[in-house]
Length: 73
Image 1 (cartoon, one colour):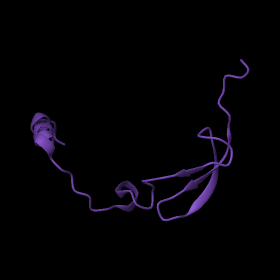
Image 2 (cartoon, one colour):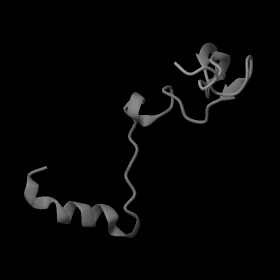
Image 3 (tube, one colour):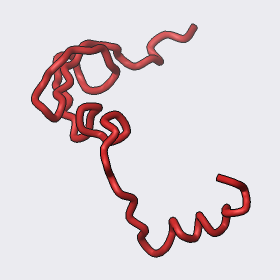
């Protein structure tokens, strides 16, 4: 295995949108730095089951639905 080709793996702090902070290991930043998240599992609709509505800008969703309407989705 080649030496000195892998990024430095170290401990950082991750700050969630609600102010919660936890430590994890990452290749991001430098040892002891804090990563502040704008979107995390406590607020993202994919994890919370939120009622986010899909905005149809320029009819893209309509075009997609029409294009694949016959496939039985």
